[in-house]
Length: 64
Image 1 (spheres, helix red, strand yellow):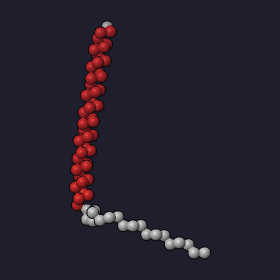
Image 2 (cartoon, one colour):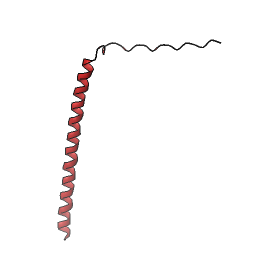
Image 3 (spheres, helix red, strand yellow):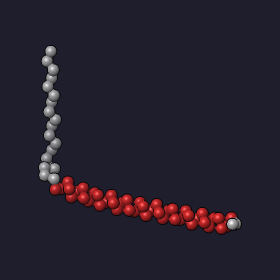
Image 4 (cartoon, one colour):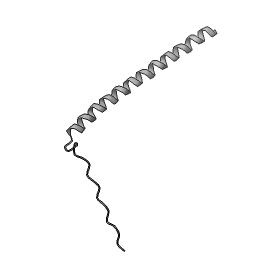
């Protein structure tokens, strides 16, 4: 196998890896978008989401 053939194979493998990584990133991005849409829909369906959070109860102070 000559050096020129080796360079061609290495370039082909790099191209395949780049395409696979970009496809994976596209799939993950689409999944994240779907999850964000569903989360927004679920948050909108929850009652009382617009109410301010309740103030936490103050713990009793110890007496000596």
